[in-house]
Image 1: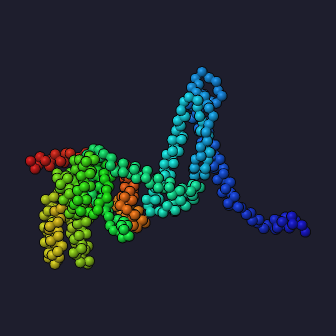
Image 2 (image 1 turned 90 degrees about the vertical axis):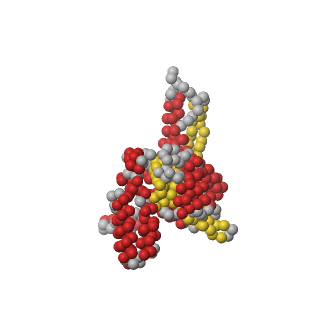
Length: 409
């Protein structure tokens, strides 16, 4: 029996045939089709743009024609589908300024930003080369990565030093400790960060700078730098109890009140509280900040301190009696803002994200690279929904301040 007869017999017996497909060839064919389609679409758009500038189609004779074609030049462009060849039209008199090329310039810029993001996130130059080859089919050289970093550092420094416009009644301050290599040793360095709420109720990243350590001199230099750039009318600064920060704030913005972060204060009290009594003490501390006004909160502080002493928690009682008043500054401002002003949480969330990003790096080669990574991440966050969504309404702010001035006058 012949081979064909055997196959017919199998089909007649009802046995299914197995059809094997070469997935590699299918994907390659699809990629070629996609690449060809993208190339034809882009070239068609370029031709249509040239016709619009000329006010006539190619070879068309009309009274309204503004210019004529003068051939074209070829340009390679890397897209997700691979490398395509563009035929960019040339005109005899008018410059060919096309929105299509500008659109893809922006795309190329986004590719550059992706390379920079990888490098700043701690990915090695060799790994960046491998990733670019896998994604776009071309290998980026180490020199290209280095040049991109220089360009990025310039853009980030320009963003860091831009003027601060408008009023910022509330600011939040904090620092983050990172590791850097120094003469074969690993040492600490601090990056100081400030965010604020503008007069429209939106959050902004106001400043980021390197500090040798979180001491008075570092904070003093940082605050003066922001004041020089235009930070004004600060009414309240929220932070943890960093003595250098508080002293520097009093020198640069003497009219501003200082709000000690409630969460940080609670943690400090818990350090002198037995583990088994932390839940009870936490409820007592929260009761202080649940009062209807500052006077009632101050009375509650006395009651809580007395109760802690009865519980044989003398150190905790002393800490509450001496430090709890520093957490009540938010009572001077609109009640609708209290929950936003009691803690440094708006900045703490950002700092957690930065710690997550910097953890993969380990030790930075120098302070500048650490600063650039933190600043790059802050700039990205500022452009997201974080910075474009209203954080609090400032309509009642001026009314409350005026009422307080009249009351104290």
